[in-house]
Length: 127
Image 1 (cartoon, rainbow, N blue to C red):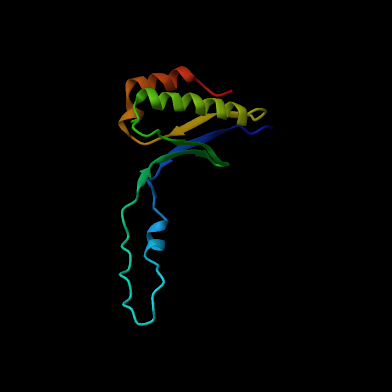
Image 2 (cartoon, rainbow, N blue to C red):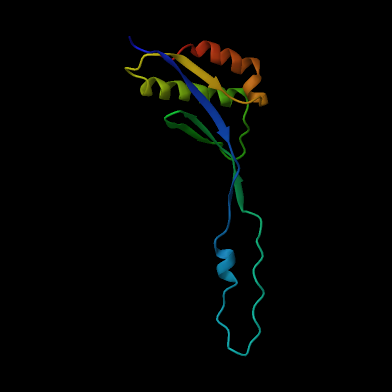
């Protein structure tokens, strides 16, 4: 008997900060033995922050998406990611007998729009 099981796919995001590594280095200077110590450098805010989204299942990461600068996540952008994810899953599931994909995402506005729901329905099962 062959066991069929559903595959759980989830999405998560985090904020990553890019710090300037030269900040600490700039405060390091050669000093004469009798001179005053330089002020310690202060930790400055990051030059850049970004929020990658990670799509994964029980076997690991399927897709990492980095939102382009100036772009916002809307239903159209999110739907394009769903299409990419379906293509990745198709390649990964070749030869596997599964009942389907359980897709878990949060309640963000782009995730719950009618356009996103229609895209999920139109994509159908991954075979």
